[in-house]
Image (tube, rainbow, N blue to C red):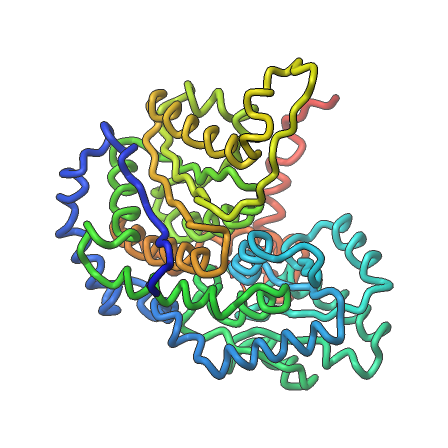
Length: 453
Ligand code: PA5
């Protein structure tokens, strides 16, 4: 960390009494073993460890090319549509929604849904906009983005004619896959998704950084935060490595019956950080009938919907709070001569953020009093460097956490089942065998027990 920079912190005092510090420390031998597997590339999924070194997967010349492309596209267009699903869009969206300044270029998303309503809205919205497309798919065959890309490319061709291809950037496998083939044939500019980086670990590749740079967010500072965190998280020492404290603590809690983790924020701009985190942990750990269920809540909003359950419901949850220490706008509470709501004691003295902070401290304490252990990660400010560090810390923790759980955190075999069923039901060529079986299985159940209203 550079002099004068305030660090990101992970506080785990509120794990007590569920987890004693000595108990956590006793996991050091297991953590050391998993650390060696991860860093030495001897554990499951070792072909997908490129993300461990963010500086290596994003060399300076590629970052410069990304920034130059983002600047070119910003000059030529007012909207970028990121076409991708899962790990191919959530990292970019998490960062952009957290950090992009209002009034900058717009980034919209497609291919993350098959909703006709949304697709129709998007195509209508884009009709009179100068837009570009960043199509992101490692395999190039994922149905959702493939469908959206066809539609958007057709619209762009009608709007921009010969210029259309200059406004399409493909981020995909460097050598293989359907999208690589299309990009080569059409002459699209491309950026690589390294073969050794899976989708949900790809935010520090062009997958994340091109849309992030287009949105006007400092991609270099984000990457710098990740690189600094990678250095800090290279020690096997549990007492010094925040990623390993987090990984060990959540596995300890899981073994004590805490099977649901809530990522809790007090900042709506972190909504997609939680969505990214849910995919990272859900897809990495939910295997072999095991894994913590990752869920999220946005406070104080959800204190008025989920708060009761968290305070007094079934005690199988723990919370990880992500809070922001400073840099929030100073929106002061105004005075009111009637003081009907009794808030004049705050008027002119406290800001909305001061109240939010007290709500946060009060909530962490209340939930602990109600039997919910928690950890709190605090960013010094909502800024690229600390956010980059946080994203990397979660990635590193996820690798070790998955190993501690006993699963391969870098594959996602369970995602295939719905695709097989969907293709079989659409009679996609090659799915003839599955088609009859899936159709029969659906017919056997569908419509048998229904109540209408
Ligand atoms: O994390 C993952 O690997 C997945 O979420 C993928 O990113 C997602 O399924 C999209 O795959 P693709 O990039 O091949 O279209």
